[in-house]
Amino acid sequence: MHRTGELFGQYKTMEQQRETASLGMWIFLSTEVLFFGGMFMTYTLNRSTYPDIFSEASKTIRLSLGAINTVVLIGSSLTMAMAVWASQVGQKKLLTIFLIATLILGCVFLGIKGVEYHEKYVEHHIPGWNFQFGEHPDVATDAHTQLFFSLYFAMTGLHALHMIVGAGLLLWLIKESIRGRFTPEYNTPVENIGLYWHFVDIVWIFLFPLLYLIDRH
Image (cartoon, rainbow, N blue to C red; front, side, top):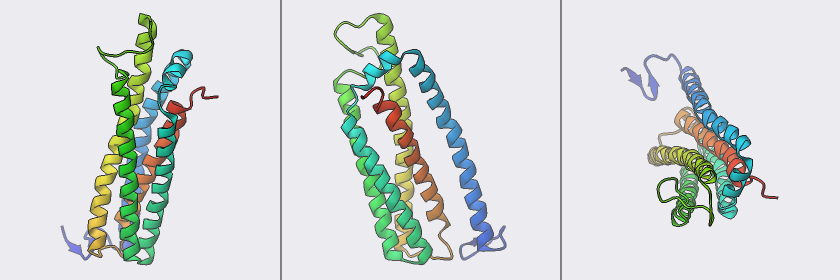
């Protein structure tokens, strides 16, 4: 495909190329909303059907770790926003610094999530043949409790997968920023990956109260 600098042949101007790429990213994110929305709906319906069981199961998840991860992700959104700003004003060194900071915060989040998963493994709270919850659970309670943890692992696991993808994209941005590729005239990848990162952070803002804050009064 013909290419002049960063301008691909099917576009007349850099602005047209940027707007097209942004539109594509927004369409992609809208499909992600539908994807996560189905899981949120499934959780909400089961939460309303088995409120007491979901409440008791939620209390076994360490609130402190979830709260720390929330702060970490909010911080990563700030550094990502600063990276977009740095790319727009031509601050190439600051761009690299903010991208690295965002990646580090993302890795901290994944590390803490790994600690959480390990705790659930030790406590036998992973749904399956070795699942245990409480001293004398009945069959119905055990099944509904496993339903909560199935949704917990599915929702947080899918979110973590998106974080891993985002970390990979950040590594690519860092490599390209070190090469000095991004300028005020061309910073579309930084803006679009920034949108993706903010979306993943927003998803967690919904996951945290749904999974960690049930009846924590």
